[in-house]
Length: 275
Ligand code: ATR
Image (tube, rainbow, N blue to C red; front, side):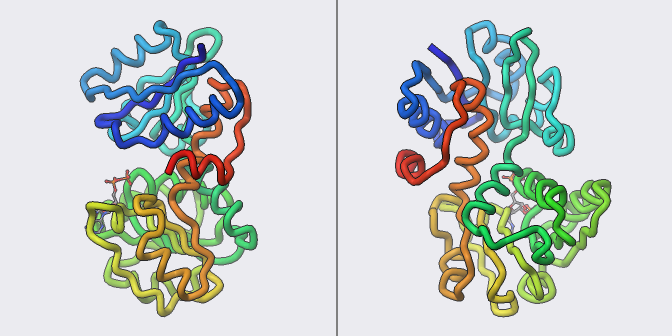
């Protein structure tokens, strides 16, 4: 059987086993995808052991993405730029290739859900400065957005991210958290919530969209609940709303292509299977 899994700590909440399990069944592939709860101090050991146990690869989730970056033998360009790995592929010669598919997954879902959006449409307003924000920011800048506005509760983290992104050579603008309902949204073509605000168990994201142009697309990375207060408010104002689940589904495609041997599709049946 083809063997793969998802490594995290904790990892019980991960939807990935259902996702990859659905694809294995759908394509009638004899495969198994298991949750791998690995403590931070055991990650290096696990990276040595999994290939010897027959794993063809594995996904990596919180809090191991940076450790995974250090433990693989080579990186794809996205992982190299982001400094974090979410997918590990065991190569035929046993070397470990680390990918970061989060940003590409976000973009693929955005393009599928909001086909009228193009990078040239205008400035992007990105809330957050954590790992998720970093991956999305890099992908959007590489897609060619004219400018990227960043804001974050903790200004130091936003400044650090802006400095990193400036190396990609494009217009990254830092805005104070207090401006998030004003200058941050004015004239934006895409608003992205890349904070954990609005997630079940976290405080809500309270953001008035009054100054956001009606043509703007609104995206949230939060997918529990699937319809966040932000997306509900956006839909009410007539914006195209892009939910967080699609990013999760699309980021899984390169991994499954490797351990499943088939390029899988992301569709309604898959969404229904993981919900
Ligand atoms: P991830 O890697 O998933 O992005 P993270 O690095 O913990 O996770 O980042 C979480 C993001 O949500 C950060 O931008 C964080 O803001 P801070 O940098 O100020 O911590 C944001 N966030 C979490 N709780 C928040 C809150 N109560 N108010 C505002 N922002 C919050």
